[in-house]
Length: 94
Image 1 (cartoon, rainbow, N blue to C red):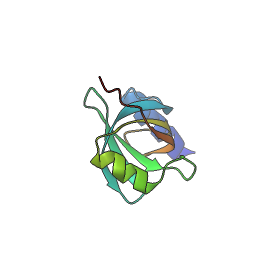
Image 2: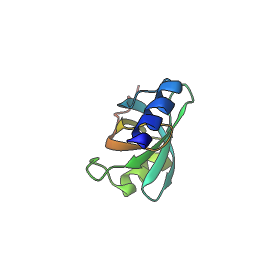
Image 3: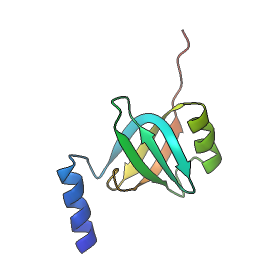
Image 4: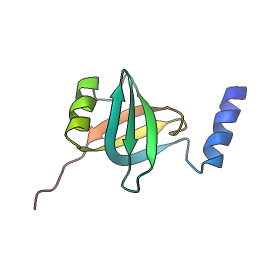
């Protein structure tokens, strides 16, 4: 209960919602965690959820190829939110 309240205060202080969706590039993959950066250069830390629809192999491949991804998360994204869905975004070729 106390941890939940402190997480809510941290997320509120950082002006980040406790759940939502972000888009960006995966910059680091380590064990079941990954870091991504959005188009504005903000970094987010996630833990890959068991039912996220993607594997660690996918994350490594997308990270190495600078593939844009969309992450749906729950929890404070600056402290290791759970990524409940991770999907590669289609890249337009012009």
